[in-house]
Image (cartoon, rainbow over all chains, first blue to last red; front, side, top):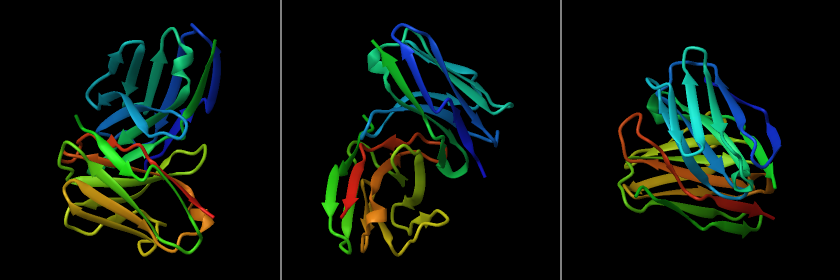
Length: 111
Length: 116
């Protein structure tokens, strides 16, 4: 059974800091890995999707890496802003289009 | 493109009543739709997977008679919480995928259910 773990559970940083969120998964037989953002009481916004054959994806200030063999992914946020405050969820896709989510990292960026 | 809507966005009901939540894919045909439940400060837990025209596949521990799922068309799936109780209060999120296995899931905005 696939299990996804995210560390840290919560993170508070001053504005402008670069930060790294971590995600690990137990079964390396994945189709892809996706990072989402969730604002309080809202649905999910997809940030980055990395296919199993890829090593990283970048979008603006966000960079996600994937090391499938070791079961790890990181989300790097550069020059953090208060508007980045949200919960970040990592999810891996295994067989049958099934997504398994981590518990999330709650990020607070202080002005 | 790839927009998924949910209705209602929030609902408050009395214990013992049934509540229906709709999930619609607005600009694509969804061969598969997924229903998730999220308790406060927890992650999304998959409840069931539904394919258009066939019975939903429920995850272990999810009562199929309590959470009725209907996927009658390629753009609409419904989740009915029957005889709701306070412990069913949660955030319910659906997603839809247009693709074959491995296709991206597009998520709805969620429905907040509060059972009094």
